Amino acid sequence: MTFWDHLAELRKRLIRIVLAVIAMAVLAFLERDIIFDKIILAPKDGEFITYKWLCKLGEFLHVDSLCMTDTHIKLINFNLSGQFMTHMTISMVFGLILAMPYVFWQLWQFVKPALYEKERKYARTAVFIMSALFLVGILFSYFFMVPWTLNFLGTYQVSTMVDNQIALSSYISTVTSVVLSVGLVFEMPVVIYVLAKVGLITPTFLVKNRKYAFVIVLILAAIITPPDVFSQIIVTIPLWALYEASIIVAKRVAPKPDPADLVED
Image (cartoon, rainbow, N blue to C red):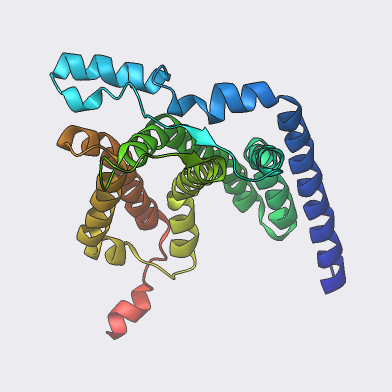
């Protein structure tokens, strides 16, 4: 294929991706009650399933701080078009999330002709793994990180003289940024695979900087969870497991040194 043929093929794939995202976004737009009442706004309610699970776990472990029954979040809208624009924004976000497996598939279809048969087999597996990791990251952030984030930020006060009245746009941006960012963070093993495959990063580098990565994970867990050790552990474990999985992946795919070079050294 010529350069222009490649551009035409890429354009075709991008058009399909955009159409898929729009189709899923329209579906989300039509299901407004489910998207907002049952999903987006659910974590601010004390009856959210995560709060119930944590309360039961707290009772079993005698850790009172795990029981977060009321976030005290009262949402208000300042702009005349605020709720409509929020509806549009959330529909696009859901469209992107729902279409993500198809997005990965189209990207794979674009690079497929340049791969050998063995590489194609691995690429098909990579599409499944990337979709699964993204979905797991979305679910983990929604059911664990979002409730703790809302509980901490929604109840934090610099003074009892100041009441929290949260703007709808602020609430939406917080929830969507946490969900999408964690979904992307869960792609870390795939990113490390690519970087290690081309030699831009090595297992030695990851192992050497493991302590710094651990500190970053702890800081992140401390920010979004209540001030107790058990809550931080619940969030730290999966994030740290991702980093360790990335090290294992890097060790398996990193280019091996040439024996001839070792002899010369």
